Image (cartoon, rainbow, N blue to C red; front, side):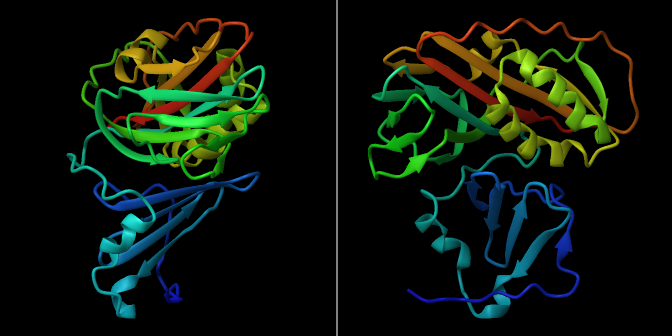
Length: 276
């Protein structure tokens, strides 16, 4: 209805990944070949972050005469995020790719064991209903919007995962580490490049990180999926990590071989940051 302009003031740049967006309204936008942009808003401030950028921008919305700014966010996303403990680990950007052998309608139901946060396209009426094509493109049946994947995030109820084995990786080596491991876990170049552009900017901010990958059966307990028609091949990857001030010694995790892709294939990846 109205065009508003917000200016970045001196001293308002900050390092991406250093602001806690818990409890704020958020919208996440992904553009082909340009990474992911996150907008987070409360009544006083709007934050804008983008993957692959050295700096993020903070805008003082209250100085522009926009009262109750955050209350307008539901026009961007469906209502506020659920109230959670600020230290609760966020299941960040699980995305679901669908590759049917021929174009067809697919229904995906997520029975997440926790508090579901932002979804895109909007998860409503108990699931996503999309028209999926063999190249991975999706058309949301509800509004006709097009997507490369189904996006969700949330706060799981159970976080008692085994971190007794895994990988201790220097922050600056995160890109090389994931570039080696993700293909071994079954991701193709489009999928692991999406993974890299989302997670490497966060991992690289730390001196060291402890990284482990949940067994698929553990991931299934957190976020069971019901898909109709059922896929022939399923690959689900969840990276659990936490920052470290110094390296530690632990047994290296043995990674399972991924299934061979055949028939209708579903691929999902996500990550969970644990507080140090």
